Amino acid sequence: MIRVLASRWQGSVLVCGKCSKKLGGGFGDKGRTPLVKLLRQALGVKKGRKADRGVVEVKCLGVCPKNAVVMVDGARPDRWMLVPARVDVDDVLEALSHLERAALPPVSSPSPPSASLPLP
Ligand code: FES
Image 1 (tube, protein in one colour):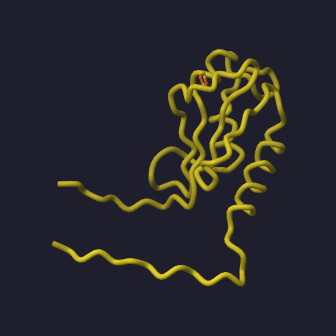
Image 2 (cartoon, rainbow, N blue to C red):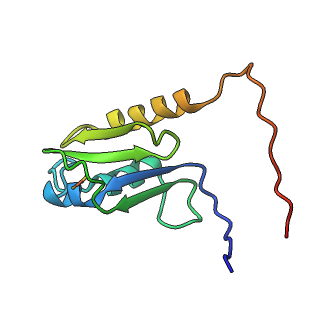
């Protein structure tokens, strides 16, 4: 049986932890802060399902760029971002908000009818 838990997440961001580890953090004033920590601070979110948004450190995503960290916005999983080391956190937030705006459906488009499955 699969249990379902409620969450306050309105979105999610995946950040490769191995990329951050290879950079020794790579962000912040001294270049030692991991991107996931910097994003959590900038967005004011904590860990767990009670946060407004999930900022999750994940294992290697298979891209493995040099001097950058792979980041995926859950709202746009079709566009992965390579965040260069030492880039300003405001630029990262701007990239995320830009993707979120692009992911919103046009105002005039009707929403598709929701299919409901009969319960067994
Ligand atoms: S180390 Fe980050 S994608 Fe492989």
